[in-house]
Length: 124
Image (cartoon, rainbow, N blue to C red; front, side, top):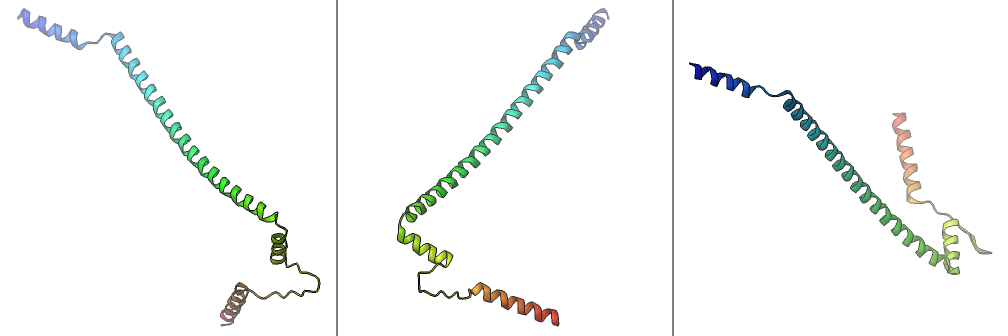
């Protein structure tokens, strides 16, 4: 019977944790949580920076394409004949003695038809 009491007493001592062990376990758990949080935060930051880099690369590509177009226009505008043709077409400039006639575009005709249809609908 005495040996049974000793073994029961040993089990109780084994189940009881020392307060420093509990504190140390909690402290290690807190450190693990903090490190996990910091790692997750770094991963999110890295993903955001990669997305920003990709967007910037696309913007650079678009600007390079625009620059190529502008350089092409610059070369064209260095030709005096091209400038004359461009001004005559875009700004309706004419030479002396010329008369310019502006014809209605299809879009203008379509707009007037739509207005007429709307007016007929309102009358009904």
